[in-house]
Image 1 (cartoon, rainbow, N blue to C red):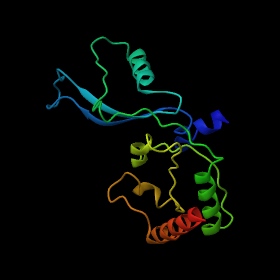
Image 2 (spheres, helix red, strand yellow):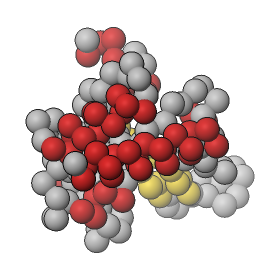
Image 3 (spheres, helix red, strand yellow):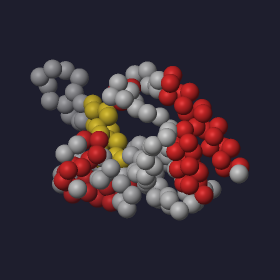
Amino acid sequence: IKQQLSSDPAANAIIRTTSAPTMISGGIKENVLPATAAARVNFRILPGENIESVLAYVRKVIQDQRVSVEVWKKDEAMNPSSVSGVNTFGFEAIQRTTQEIFPGAVVAPALMIGATDSRHYTEVAANIYRFMPVQLTHNDLPRYHGMNERISLDNYKRMIRFYRQLILNSCK
C-alpha cells in the first residue's frame, strides 16, 4: 500500500512529512555568484513526528556546517495535532450528517495534510475534526492555495445545508 500511495503526489503527502520550498532568494545579478542565499521551506509534519525531528533530519541530509537551519516564526510553528478518535459524539454526528446530505457517501477517517485554524483549539477540545463537506472536481483542485482561492457556488450551498443539519443533529 505504501508503495502505491508513494507513486501519487497527493496520496504521498498523507504517509510522510512533506516539504515545499515556498521562497528562495540569492543573487541579484546574472553571472555573479551570490555571497548568501536563503530558502523558506514549509513542512507538513506527519503525526508521530515533530518540529525537532524534522530539523534533525534536514540537518542530517544537508550535512554542511555553512548552512544554518532554523525555525522561522518560532512562536507560530506548531507540532502536528493529535489524531482524533472515531468512536466519539463528534465523529458520529459528522458521519450521520454526511450520510443525510450526501446519500451513499462513505465516511472514513483520514489525515488532513494542511494547516487549519483548528490548531488554535487544541487546548480546549479533545477531538478536532477538519472536515469540509464539498464534492471536489479536478477543476476545483487548482484553486486551492492558488490565486483567487474559492469553492463553487454549488459546494457553498451544500456546505450551508450540511452545517445547518449538523447543528440540528448535535442538539438531539
